[in-house]
Image 1 (cartoon, rainbow over the protein chains, first blue to last red):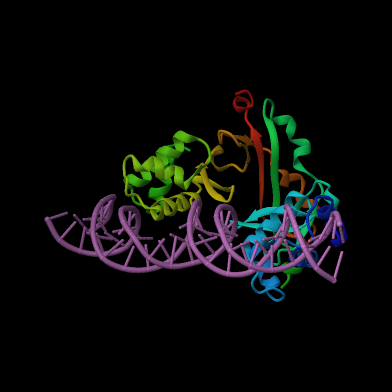
Image 2 (image 1 turned 90 degrees about the vertical axis):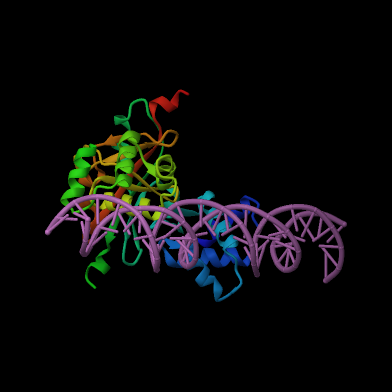
Length: 138
Length: 138
DNA sequence: GGTCGTAATAGTAATCGTTCCTATTTAAAG
DNA sequence: CTTTAAATAGGAACGATTACTATTACGACC
């Protein structure tokens, strides 16, 4: 998702255009991988040393709810990355070294739901961890 | 896994037979679902009100490393349950109401690894969330 | 451009789960 | 029974996240 597309969603939902949000979005677009709130804070500190964690978490959560970001939980931390594939359902391989992700378009639920009769499926999580080709050969 | 099987593994690895461990194991066998450290503590308090979280986490971690327990991360918390299927690789449906789990013997990695050329897969996580048949009709 | 109402924020405190530390206790081997 | 190392209690410390409140800033309207 591009910066313009993200702002379009935000403005459509009556959110204001602030410098903090601009910096957060630019950072996430540039990174193109899962980042922590702390990483966002460290990057923001250059422009706004007094930024509050409240601001960071509130905005990241908002972006996530609006589908601008994807969110996961890794090593006991919330992690965020730009929405890829324009919101089309997918999963990720996540490199445990550099954090880079690779899309996995295939979803295991397609072939699995039939095996849960009587159950009401609400969601699922599928992630593959390991080393990406770059990090395999250091 | 039964209590006897768990103790067999522990004794083989030179761990001592303590009352704390007995209570933790009995609790987990009785529950047959993912539980938090806090739930373990609350149950232990009846027998041993002064039990320390250090003791609980240390033992749960030990059990997990020895394959006596399975561990996952749910809602930002570590959760533990008895090893099922005698350690044969599997996944879980987890009921978001009662916490009960249902085994999913099929693993999506069987059909997927081929699509990650050059990548070194180290692990994966696959969980399905929703309501079990009992919780669908309250 | 100025004013106004509300969203957004900074700064800080509080919470929660987990881990660390150290003196004491206990299992179990001799 | 003694001995010794493992196990534990109790509490402090930690890191991530959330909550609170006074202040600031966006942007709609005039």
